[in-house]
Length: 197
Image (tube, rainbow, N blue to C red; front, side, top):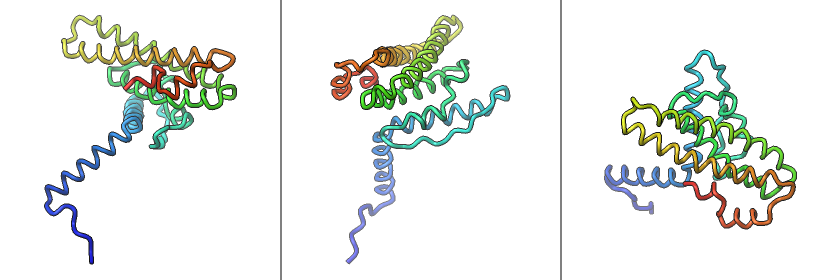
């Protein structure tokens, strides 16, 4: 005997499909955001003839993307120009997604990865400084409408939070030995980047 149909009407099937997609998105929100930011950046660089486009590989859609998959396909540190608010947001998404794998490497094998992690965090901090400066100049623009200023202020707030989280990780990586409080804070999800939603 065949199993009974779960969804008898077209409307039930549509609703079930919508619920499935919503659950999938919630489970994979970070990876999807990273993938969309990378696609956006690739389109942006393809549309400008003065920038040599770098082919992007699709990141692994796991819960913990590897550093090599992110750093090999991101061009956020190669070009210091922030073209618009969307470009600034995409840089923030890429940096935020890379903080967890960097801290994971620090916690699990500190001595082998300390210098590489510190170098990568230094690059991120430079990019965050450029993003912050761009956003500061956007808020000073007197001709901007109030809705745009509100959007820029929200992105600036997120930028400051990511900057503080990256600085915290950089400070941990600057020590010659791993800080005793970092590992328990990492496992309790008490580091700053772990509180950024």
